Image (cartoon, rainbow over all chains, first blue to last red; front, side, top):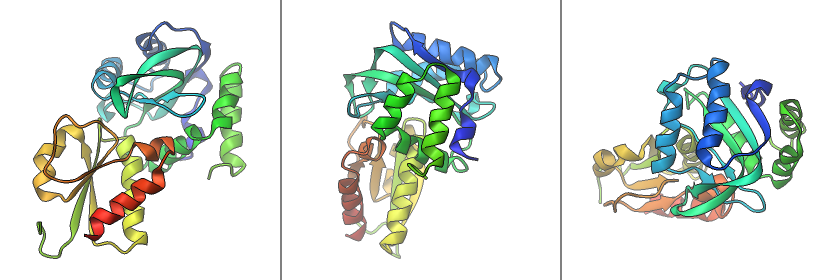
Length: 159
Length: 99
């Protein structure tokens, strides 16, 4: 399975204005739930996990969060995306006391880590690519985000 | 500390849920082991499981923050996710596995 297959227009939100991370979680969770990717229990799993093991990643100009939870809450694998119109605070995965101003949230719903390794590796490479982050922040709508992802994956900018 | 008669080292790779970030890290560590011909094996688990496995392991590689100190050395693998200092992490892991 290629990483581009995990992104779907119906689970992508661009320019979301949210006051805090729970709001972002609720919006993305609803998309995932309504489209049959996760169980109802997924939201609580996400919130609880974030509170103990935060997923904010401090990068360069743009910061990212990768909330995810146990496979038992997932029905079909997918990655929901929210680009935020203003940064939302997450705690740093490397230092849970530290705040990170996050611009893009990738909510990962995976249920088989071993068959999904490559996609995870690709996601990690994508988030390390600043021009990729910049491109999706400027995208208007899920279609544009998906096009951007496909471009970055296909044109060998990442394998 | 020889925990295994063959001198085979066990590396625990852990993260909060044991599914996403630890998978990426585990793959990288496995590759390091292969490319450097190290006598070692990777076991992937959740942070909550480490305490019960640390007696059989030689090294812990993690992206999470530790709730306690462990009897085995720990390498923080956050850099594999952010791309910052990943080569230093490689060197540290190799160093522990060659001992």
